Length: 166
Image (cartoon, rainbow, N blue to C red; front, side):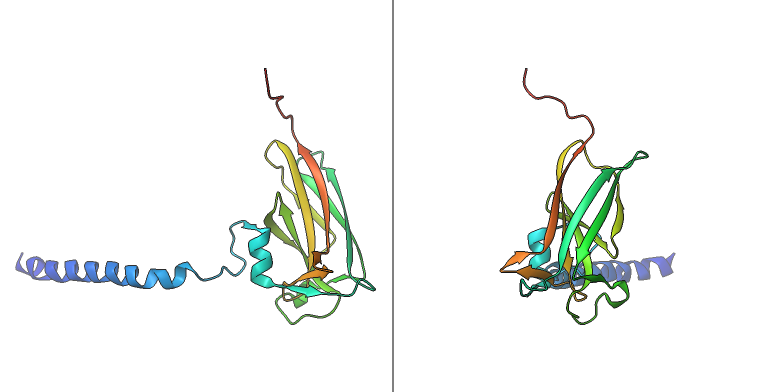
């Protein structure tokens, strides 16, 4: 019994010390930029984090997108690129002109990286959604021409949308 009573104050001090240390250290981690965190990220935040690469309109990468409803659920996305090569083995490496990957956004929120021209996107919430694919270099910087992202956009309608009003 005396062993427990002697250890109890030390356990209390250790617990309080751990909490105080957590309170002091946590703010240092709170403002760290996420490195491709698993949570969805807005396009503006993503753009600011990785920067951009301005390229000449002549010979610039190009992207177009086809989206079709998959009969078994979700959406099939097919990208058509020009002057651009997907290089998944070089992700996180230095920029090489006209190579890289793409970022998929739904309603302005980054959902995935695309390392090739084909991607299956799961079903979305009912309603209208804007799907955007933007080309990025190996180091994640977005390709831009005259300050505008090189991207493709499409609108999809998921499911039956109730009619509003009376």
